[in-house]
Image 1 (tube, rainbow, N blue to C red):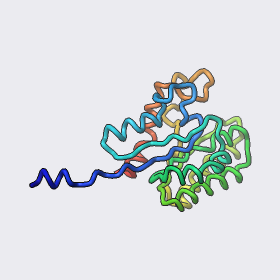
Image 2: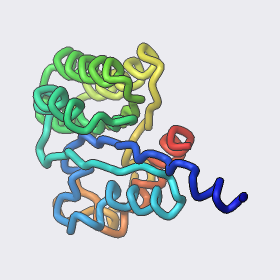
Image 3: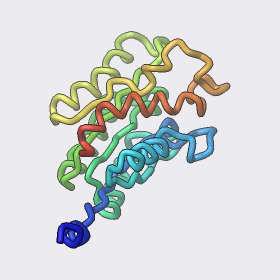
Image 4: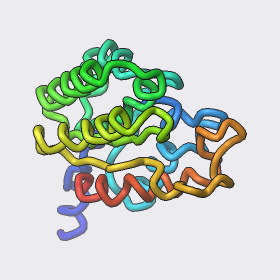
Amino acid sequence: MIAILLAAAPAQAVQNILVLGDSLSASYGLAQERGWVSLLQQRLTSEKRTYRVINASISGETTSGGLYRIDALLAKHRPAIVILELGANDGLRGLSLAATRSNLETMIQQAKKAHAKVVLIGMRLPPNYGPAYTEQFTELFENLAKKYHIARVPFLLIALTGKREYFQADGLHPTAEAQGLLLDTVWPILKPMTR
């Protein structure tokens, strides 16, 4: 009788995690399966968490590009969780911080309206962009997370700071060996959300 009841129990429905990012999440310079987003899927599967990861990241993507695409992605995939890893290219191009903030804010609003939990991944800029710009850039992620009460990873590359060996020849993109460290940076924030 117990075996029959167990067999009749419905399987837990698979939920989607949408990753909307730039080259840091699009496995730039690496095989797709070696990137941290693919490693995230492997970890979720190994821990028997019923989530499917959809990687909608594009190398070179800006917050305006993400904003342009997010509505269609939300409608298509109906994610339970949205990971926003955008803004680095805005900063590196010296784009308007007000526009970056507005784009991220609108994406957060759209994800929440679609009943998705949001993880905002923060970035930092090299010091050569000037202290005022770099500080304001870092703070905009923190301020948005506080305003919307969403989860935040303060800095995706924190574990790689000062470790040149973890970067490709361009000095910007992490190597395959560094991808597990990126996942380990995101995982403590994401794990409680995937119970």
